[in-house]
Length: 471
Image 1 (cartoon, helix red, strand yellow):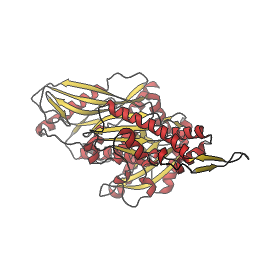
Image 2: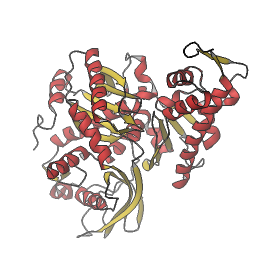
Image 3: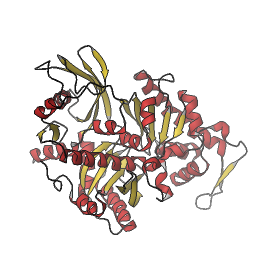
Image 4: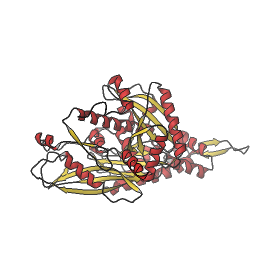
């Protein structure tokens, strides 16, 4: 059996002494901002925010860490602000989001022939099937971040969400494999490490955002989560409880700001302010006779900017982003007839005026803004309910998923550990215990916990092992 104290980190043990629940910290390293949020679940399963800090992001471009020293200082500033908001916090470890245009995905298929077709399928066989997918060929500069199973098959039985309890000769599954650039991931690890923190786990940012803004009905109906960040727009598509597609679109709010700067001949700071205060994603909704007065530089006359021209620039770029979204939906055969949950917009860029209308026009799907407040307790500061913090909230939820799974194993029968590439100490029930407790083959709808469980962890340990070998 695993000792309860051993299953928790040092900072979790200190915090858990207060109400039995650990304090978990999500760290979102974005192109425009770095945010750190510390949260703890209450007795009703809602997140109580205990600390919050942010800082301007320096050294990150298009979601990738390019300057480790600058990024380290920005992380330290965000953590100092978080600790200043609650001096009683002790933060040593964080859950970190990963994004950037280097992140890619592919679909694969895997099958294994069972040794005994009369015995019921066990968890160990499913893990062996997943383990085989880490042998999938990817370019030498890339690394498999995650292998997420989709539909399983057992002989002639199709579209099985959980094959444990079935019997058959062959078990197979479709897999969604996410890859990323090795150096990009290492740069994140080094930046956080130099800031005096330990990465408890890495998680793909669109999946973290999806966990924060989705509900059970979204998973069942089918939904596309579009997270519009500063450097990239992240996409995660779900249908019938299964992750069907992930994509990173190499455009975000920074591109819109740059377009405004170049198109209207203003400074970047002026372009950003105009975008936030007067920007609209629909030129037809902007007032034709409204103008913004921009002070002239060094004694030069002021400049009058048309609000309609500003909206036209924003609309062109946002339309391009949404056309990428439509393209990715068509790639996996999902359109207006299948995604009944429509599109959920989140991230800082989702706060543009009239973006919902433009999204519905371009994609043909219903759209809404995704707020992370469904998982938060009442009484938190209003700023944390904004879509820009969805990734941070999702990272905390992922941390609790890992913690609660480890706690569940403490009260189960004896277990053994299987080392899997890309995973660290995957814990599997013993086959003896599984065979003594038959599980009937029941079709079960996937819920949010199943989705979080499907996202494996231990990626950061894999990279540390590789770095150790190179020394």
